[in-house]
Image 1: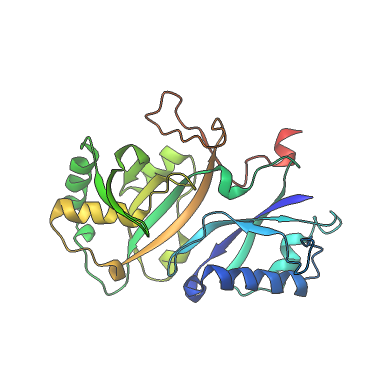
Image 2: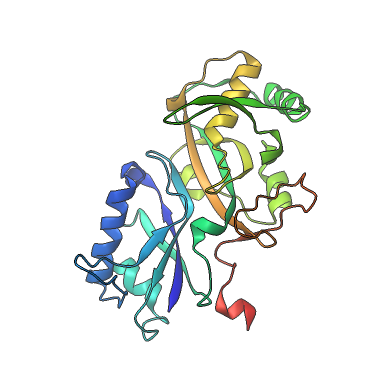
Length: 272
């Protein structure tokens, strides 16, 4: 039986890497006595996969993991059983069963919501409300936003303007655009100052990072980009309802993207 977990990753746990996170969950499943399926072969491993793992230092309220269960006997109390054996800074917040033909989270990922906050004790030009408003109006009025895209083999300039679906400094405006509560309680408790909210294209084909948007804003304002001054927090991850395998739709596409949170996409109880 295919299933999907939604979990948060905050506090000091944001500094553990992807491989360590995998080992963390593998041990948690064993401690909670979850009947997760294993691969066949010489070196069996638990059948799990993640949607676009976070970079080191980033926090999140909406990380996703797909897994395969041996049976559904533990479905009703799954969240309680797994959270009891885990650290408070990684918490499972949702658990859903998927169609058997459901695709993996990574293969359907089409967009992400982010909050960009200034860390306590740090200074940034984004802390000035009047300047921030004027800067965003100018930025969003541009026809193109060129950023340097680096790979292991090459570097090239890429226009990411159509991949920025929403960029605002207003939590109310962002909530109205996404239809979701965008309060980031984990940031507020840590003394961070949220300054920007954005929704960007994401996935294995095109993946726009909030750091790229920040750098482009700094270049526009002729400011030095300091990666250690900002905390990036992921708020939600989405699938495009109408996209087929290998397709990328944006808001400017002939067929605009229609985003649904991964916790709502292809779940059994939504399609019965």
